[in-house]
Image 1 (cartoon, rainbow, N blue to C red):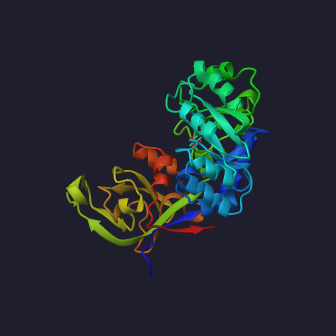
Image 2 (image 1 turned 60 degrees about the horizontal axis):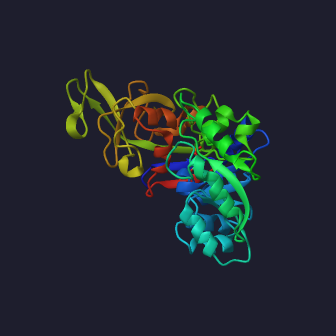
Image 3 (image 1 turned 135 degrees about the horizontal axis):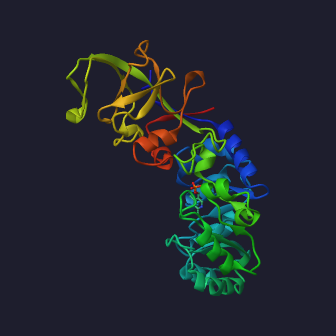
Length: 364
Ligand SMILES: *Cc1c(COP(=O)(O)O)cnc(C)c1O
């Protein structure tokens, strides 16, 4: 028997989540964001669940090639654009749309020899201060692009830094409106948080929305709203089994560094899951976990291949009992990845992207 840890990808959940996102941003076209190997879920494994989208957006040319190899003929967008001039040849060959965020990328386009003009998304830096043209330089970049025979349609995009928080989108949205006012071309501004929170506003949702994390069933603004609030279902389950149980006496410690001391006698289970599987090493004692679908907690330090869980709420648990690290458990039980991430001081994004190569992945 192989080591019992496994991940399961739920394509029905991906389809359901896309449906929820279409309801949140009615009439907008939907990019399936599959960067980072579909947020750790796997591009090939999620293709059936995501192919109802209007396009695929990603970062690596290698990922774009994989989407084309799956038979996808619709739009593919490179979210950071090209990294060097010869990438433009692959854009021509694979018919990729690409983001233009720098003068250098425009220089490369101007030198590119092609018979087929390329579709680009011009990126405004509206306040995130990572990629994009500053508002006062945006129209000049647009004019330069519009004059190039290598360029076909030009669309407009920006990325919000605070769509999930108190600061919100209004200041950045105002920059975007001012910079793009009167220019022809489609518009795309919304990540998951903006799609769910502001997608009802036609001018904000624009022509294309770009929800990543929500499609995978995590909430972009947990703990303010959980995934269920947004009508999202987990697209990934990480599960394993108990491989041993122990009675730990009062005063005894558990795991490396002896950071947990039992205050009273406790029955504990050892789970075949550790940081080498992608479970976060910094998960503290009390991180939630399900055993046989019953909620309990981790105890002590996460080690490479094992964690220890409290069996007090599940006295019938035994070696072989099913453990749900996140996602869907037995009997309809669920453990949202956001709750596990929150206990670890991080976000669901990081946990799903970190799923380790040694974990076998099933698709249901
Ligand atoms: C990753 C990414 C998104 C998706 O963000 P989520 O928070 O996962 O919805 C949208 N737009 C761009 C440009 C991105 O890089």
